[in-house]
Every structure is written in structure tokens, then in C-alpha cells.
Image (cartoon, rainbow, N blue to C red):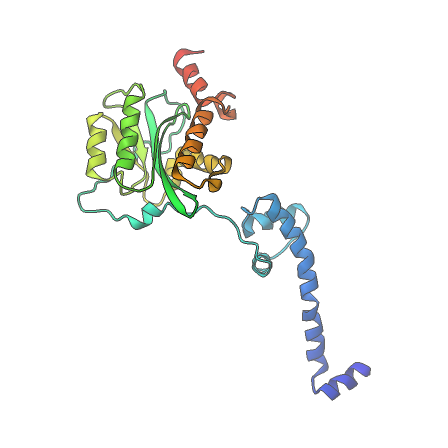
Length: 276
């Protein structure tokens, strides 16, 4: 009776009061759910999105609507870290003189001999409020990084120099049969790049448009590199270049990989070629 009397004095309906009372309790319940979501979010190093958190909550015996997860994440500023797309793919536009090629590789990432199938791509590396751009060529058979070049810009010499380094590193290129795979980015459809590849008698292969999985080996490398290298602490291009150079050496000769029979890429390459 006291509730009804107070509702009459306040000129609100009892039903409206009880509805408000139920809603007023929501923040406290949300906070309890937030603590669990925050624990999962931190375990994932801020890389878990709402879908992953939903599945992790199931492991804790909690069933929660994905909209509620999103609402709690927004309320408590749990922002997921996601890999940004390469800026050069968004700012570069192809001219009519550029050409694309068929996907000759067709996601066949195993069963190759070293130096017969390469993949290549460009990634950006942020440092001290700037960007550096890294071009890499990876041997699909061994996982070895056979050539790389880093620059402050995205001009054509970024990839042309990388190809020149591949040519000069001693890799045995079989004329007419060695494949080099890339995406359909501006650099790889450029006539200057195409002529350089033709001069080496290599076969160009390209991912289908919008299919990054077609070039999964190089994307995987970039992901591991950015997880392993503390590049954000660099303040100069030279410092960053030295850090990347050291990582390339470590990746090729000091980082065993389970899928390479627990060998480093260089050791696995020698194993495939020499049986050692």
C-alpha cells in the first residue's frame, strides 16, 4: 500500500515504477557481466571481437545475446584491435596500361620445391606518427624470406628493388616455370614490374580480387612479424630498418616452425634440397 500511495503522490503508475526499478538494476548486472567479458578480452590481448567473446562465454557456461555483448563493450570502451588494410591499396588506382594475371598458384601452398614458387606483398609499419612500407618475397616451399626492401614511400622502386634483391640472392630461378604470386595491387599490375618479371622469365600469378586467402602465406608472415616485433617504439626510420633486418635474420635462421619439421626456414630449405 505504501508503494501505491507514493506512486499516487508522485503521479506515476505502479506499473511504470516497477518497470523503472527493473531497469535501474541493469547497470549492476551489466557490471558483473563486464568483469567476465573484460577478463576474456584481456586474455585475447584486446584482439577478440564480440563473436569470439560470445564463444568464450559459452565455455564459461554463460549464454549471452551478441547485441548485449556489443552494448557492454561499447559502454565500457572495450575496443578491439584489428589489422588495418594496407593504405596503398586504397590510395592507388590502376591505369588502363596495367594488367592482371590468372591465379596460377590457386592456393596450392604445399608440395613445392624451394625456389620454384614465391609469394609477395607490401605491408605498412607505423612508427613515431609516420609509416614505413615493407615489400617482402617469401619462398612458399621453405617459408624462407628470400628478399625484402623497406622504404618511406610507396613508389614503384619499392617492389622493383625487392625483385632485384631476389635476383641477386643466389636463388635458382627455373626459366618459364618459377611462379611469383601477388595480389592485384597497383605495383604488381604496373608495366614496369611486369617487364621485370618477364625479364627473369618468371610466371606471374595473382589472387582473385578481394581474396586475401589466395596469398595466405605472406599474410601469415606479416601477422607473425607484427606480433613479434616491437616496432611502435622506434623513433627513426633507421632504427626501424635495423629492427626489421634483425627480425628477418631471426625468422630465417633462428625461429623453428612446427610445420617445417621443427626446423628454421633456411634449415628446412637445405633439408628439402640436400636431404640434410
